[in-house]
Length: 462
Image (cartoon, rainbow, N blue to C red):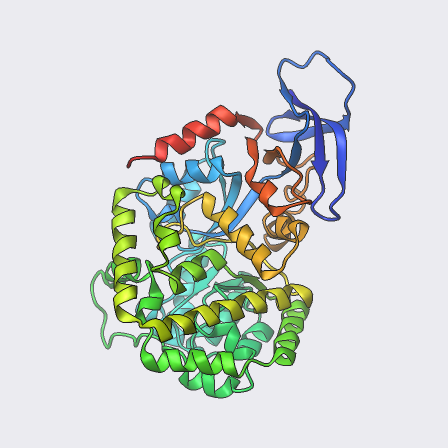
């Protein structure tokens, strides 16, 4: 047992800050919270004077387990206050390892993972897709991730997932009516789409954009190819560095059409639909910005790139050069206008009560560095117009609600998991204060500023 003494407890639900509190922690849980009374017999005391304690941060869209050895990336995530994450891609092997591997207080908590992402290889037809859903659920997948599938396959997947009691999340499939997907139960939409995705649903040219304005799904192979899943995984790893690189001139004209035909009334109606259906959005704005501004010199000059590997920096610089070569100034301006509209849509979602989650798409995406990218996401949510308290919720109470973990996480209360972040500034006053991390508690284990600095330093120079 130990205590965090004389700290201010922040409640993300209402923004209240209760100063001069002692938190006692034992067996990985918060056992007591009360007014500071001075020294007592606790064997260890963490000084909380002039500090604020919030629930541990959650990255609700991450891929660290794509790596053979994710220790450095998981360490970075912990060092930047991330105590839990939703893994957004899986494999049968990962699901097996997850069953056999215990949780550790030296890395963020794995909160959810799917099986293999649905593609034409494993879900090319409705019957095949239904079998894949059943297989993944048997293997222990927490949700089904949709990606490059047809509308016909998507609705078959959604129906089977509903029958088995698991959610469907991920990429809104090209050609799917976003309202129909929300009504059907699509649980969380990632990347504001991707592509036109949600933007198409906010346009007065919606039907035209849905049928002609997005890159269609990859066609299923006509026969079974041995090890096709591994081949697809390799291809996707290259594409995922920057999928925007594949944008054709025709697709870019459709993006401009979506911008020109944006209808705020439709956007607000869609946001209210999301709220009524409990359809969540995880915008991953840092990922979207890194795609659509891939050659921005600000990315190459970012000092946090020291935490990326040499191989990642080489690949990302190559992606930036290819982006710069392929698109001219006028096309760059379209991407910039698209991102501005995506920020506006995120603000509308928030204003109309549509639930939001903070996520980054680390690891693998160009310029998205594990750990620190969640704070970049917070900054972009602020740029979209969300307030500090609302942003704090997207990484604390809202993930707990989305994952059905409110009894264990999301607030600093007695009986809940001791996954906590100590800050030197009040996060309800400024989003910048979420960067002032001076301590992290994971599973009851306290990591002080020196330990967090060591985790960061370990990742440098790889």
